[in-house]
Image (cartoon, rainbow, N blue to C red; front, side, top):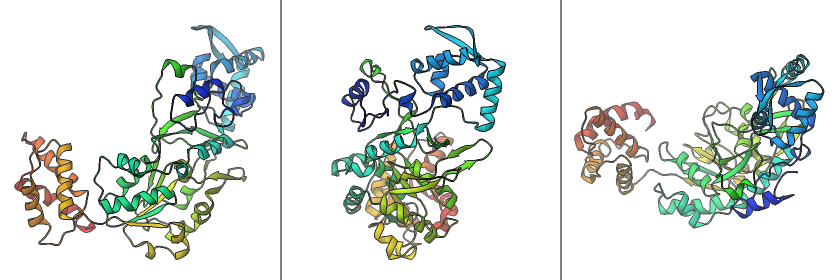
Length: 442
């Protein structure tokens, strides 16, 4: 298998020496090392050519994310069987290829069977090995890593002390408290405590079924540095290096999102959210307000939380075992005990309240955000805001409000060609529109 932790080649060994990575997918040296059959790879080739009409061999190799050198034999075989023909010479000892009539028929038949084109998939077994090597449970972040991850936001010392052990356990936690106090922001910083990046297959393959795993909505690619030394230690292009993922789902979450979704027209499946969040963080935001009962959702995850594996069903009915290796966070405005029973709460051992900020922290947040908006910090203006718009009405302070109010002041000043300043009359102006909209949430 082309995995560096099980069968390291010279190139993959060099790569690991030049990086901090515990896992790096080595470039396959043959079709056999991809874990796919030659027939399957040929099908990907002809479907791509059917879509574009004509292409060079190297461009085809780039599209399906396999090395050109291991595909040359397939090109020769397809040409000998009159599936492909040359249409001209291409640079670097290559040719342009197009389909024959016979080749077009084969490609059309393949497209009707499965419309997938693009990167060659990675066998599920290889993915399981990669998750085991990159799991958050293997990281055990220390205080220094937490301080680095939270360096650009303010976290009260008491909460910081609670978050450390919770993250170190990798067991998951409840974050509860009023909306607008930064629970989602905290979750994203927690993910960063476990290392900056991981390797993820674009698509998985098992028992003839294709499951798309990479999702641009949740996965942010990291550009690989093209150094001279790493050229000799190239990686498997079927994988993409991404920022360790934080998958956030809210009130739109349904039970269907936890299962493999299959499109019967294209015969392509989509991975569920827990698979997309492996080796990262899965945040169930606004928990308790989903369209499914909290108990039903929690019951679905009791076994995965206990055993760190999940069981999914492929389109052909086969049951597969997949890793359940992420820090799972339930963010809620409600008390955890009001949502579920003791049996589940035992499996989420950490419950951390994200309380409203004090007046001192509120001032500190204004000073932090003032710098980001290029605005001089004026504590007296914030005192005016608190004394006029918070204390008399008993309005609770939220950590999002300094940023939001300063954003509105900035918009007003830019529109009127005025210097961006924290002034009492500016606060009076923006408070009217801001709290009229969100009053029902406070």
